[in-house]
Length: 91
Image (cartoon, rainbow, N blue to C red; front, side, top):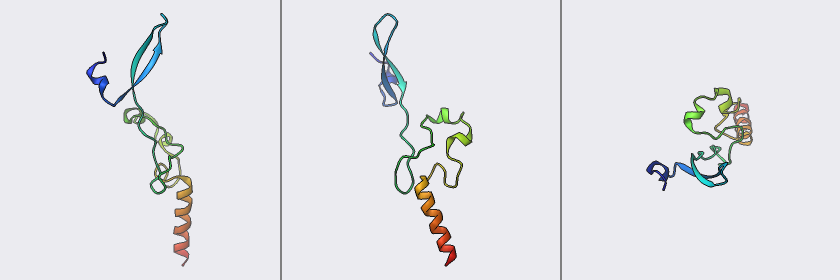
């Protein structure tokens, strides 16, 4: 019977085989959903998927790509946005 805290949606079941060849259930925290692009809603690459407590210990440069709009827009949407901005200034 799982403990009360393990019955919430926060934990996922992981079946582990022990050295005594028994299958037991461990409860581990589930990962949050992937970060998505602000315009096209595609999952962003280069952004890790971890809980906020873990992400706070990761260096800032490893949390998102080092480019304008990194961690907010995907590379394709960023490229299009910068093109639109330049074309708008030229007119």
